[in-house]
Image (cartoon, rainbow, N blue to C red; front, side, top):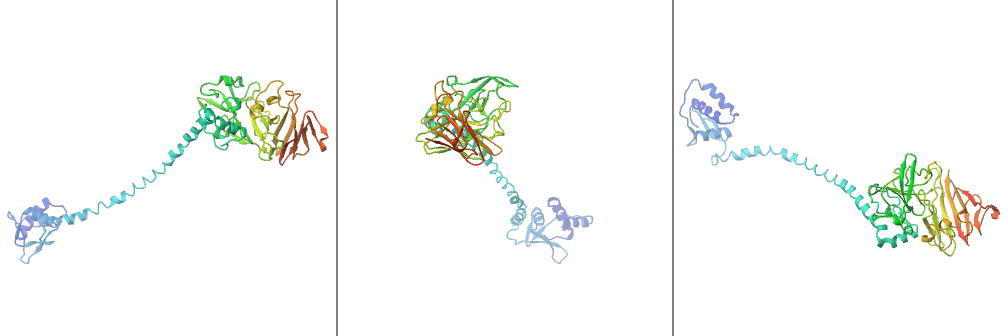
Length: 447
């Protein structure tokens, strides 16, 4: 751009009005010369080409043109880049400057990236909540569905239970389902959908339960025998004891045990223990060995519950089975604080569970009229094991085999209707005999 210094001032004035405020050099020239000269014609010459004022101002502003002194005292413009692309050239220089500004964007992208990472972490939480549904669902079938009756009977006859160590899902299983997958042993021979007993108190006071209905098969409803508001007792497998019973008991001494059917679901009644069953004392092993040629069924009393001898243990010929014995300081106590032991009924050889562990009538020799009993308890690490007559219920029938207790501090046995102890079993007592032991105790059934 060829002109005098005064023309430069006029051009700078026009440029400063339209260009970026960064053109400070031209602005200072304007203030220095503007008061002395008036210019009305401006020519911006680039080589031999005369540029328009907007082109000239834009070139000066974006750096593609610059002022130079041609040696004659006039200022001219010179291309800062090859003249072949005077106008398009600005775009590339400007864009590179703009490109670095988005550079922070990649830094922002990693920030969201961790966000998805935590999302998978919570995902397992729902997965943990989901298992209760499958856990509950399989429990519905074992006793209620007729096709499973045979399997239930086989399991019961062997006194085997499954899942005894699994925590019970409190309030999740319907009352119409028997909780066989949580260690409860179904008892189909009683006709109560697997339950050992169902008790429904009609009077509930601070002093205890009263007017307790013991549900029979005829009183079971469409949804089963564990009725709303009832305490549904169950058996446990070999070596295990039931550990669910309410703190409140019968006002006049009745025992009440099992799960509570409330609002259609089964609730724990002793929530300090999260399982339905627990092993009997583990300090001293107590077993029964069958040396007879036929199966013998022992029946344990269902308490707390209806107190019938309905919980079976079948001992096949040659088999050794474990007996559950409670710690009297830790197990269920009566309303008045009385301690309890485990009690088994000894039946005639060959009697099945369905016959031996059922309530009989006067004149029978099975169930509550079985000839003899076994009692077990432990206190302070000492097991007390006894055998004694089932008086006064059974006064006539005798077992046709010998019951001998080994491992105690004194010899003790039942034979031919006599309960004798001591050396050579020389001391016989009508009330039975008891021995104490701190190691294994073995009841031997032999001819």
